[in-house]
Length: 71
Image (cartoon, rainbow, N blue to C red):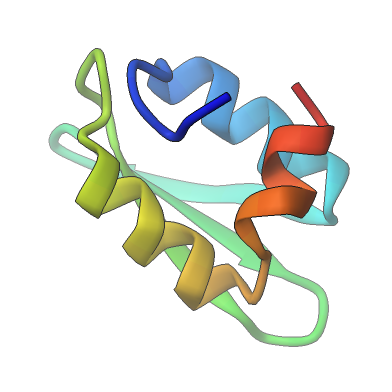
């Protein structure tokens, strides 16, 4: 499985399972925050492009395999 063709809703749901919660929204970007202070922004576009998702996962400290395991 790859990081292609994932919706923003799906990404937020998976990030929620890792402890991130919606902190706010500005325009078409949703801001999520973790209890330890990590901060991630997810664009509200479908599908989220693969390079963007890779960047989100890097910021969140989540590996590709951990993300795909949650699908």
